[in-house]
Length: 106
Image (cartoon, rainbow, N blue to C red; front, top):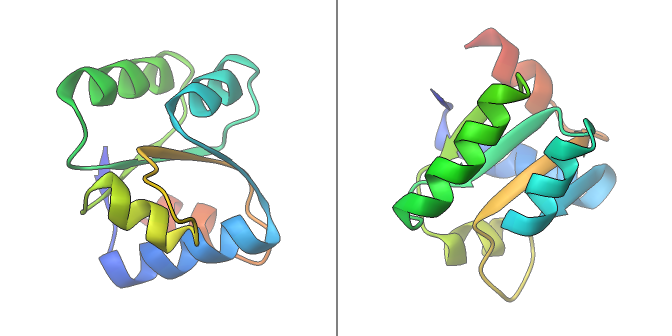
């Protein structure tokens, strides 16, 4: 797992959600990994341990990079512009965001 600058990650997540294609929530993230659509997984650092382990294991098996959002699922949901908690986000298409390029630099 990689840690990326929080400000950059937050703005890149928001841009990806608004202009690209993303999957929100653990079930949708796992589905995007299984369907080989996910290019990057962002997971909230303050999730249940089992949730974090499940998502990171599946991503590792599928060779999908994982970035850690330093916050809880409510904060990740707010960054995504949603009024609910989001434990994980899968970036399928980055849109106008540089999130995939930022992740490769680390």
